[in-house]
Length: 259
Ligand SMILES: Nc1ncnc2c1ncn2[C@@H]1O[C@H](COP(=O)(O)OP(=O)(O)OP(=O)(O)O)[C@@H](O)[C@H]1O
Image 1 (cartoon, rainbow, N blue to C red):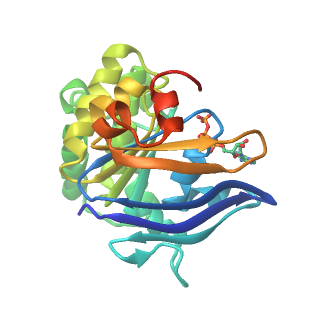
Image 2: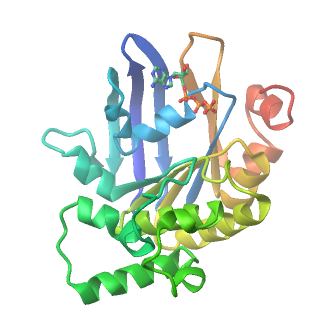
């Protein structure tokens, strides 16, 4: 079930360093939101706070609220492992478990969450997840072969199938196409359009055309200089951000004047 995300006064630190300052944003369910901005402005750092993934980095912590349909992911007693099953993540480089079969790769996240399922339920989940990731037809005859035998684009769709199998509410994607060729990139972008029927999707991308192709809304982050924190400058409909932004910094960035 897709859920909305509401972030209030979120600050993210690496030790003493304030990397992202005071983000407030409301992300609709069943939508695709793109995060854009120059290198080092904190897009990935902020994205990781949406499923508490930053907590695996020693010294990293966040202050503020991230609410999923009104429930604070940072509330007392909330288990980060549960958070990550509700808010899945797809990374820049496809990272299937190389020696594991395609089938077991799809089920890896489910098993990690200690969910016990029957063989037939597992078969159904593998099929529906691979179909959902537009990969089924390409792999259905070799489910027991290792995931590493797939092309980069297929591996990334396998990782998306693995994320979908856990049935999250939100899917976060950190530059999911940056390691892929143009054809695989189009396959992932097509998939993102389909994913928003079931999930809330948030994607970090350096590719402005990609943001315009896939995102309903776009958030522009910026940084004033080295050592300064990244900030959310403007968040609006994607067409507004690219054609009629309110902030000069946004206009300069989307028109290629810096970054
Ligand atoms: N693991 C880390 N430890 C310490 N500082 C970090 C770490 N990861 C990122 N930072 C710092 O936090 C700031 C934001 O980095 P982040 O990677 O989130 O930016 P970004 O906008 O995603 O950049 P890019 O577009 O280059 O991926 C930068 O100053 C970066 O050096």
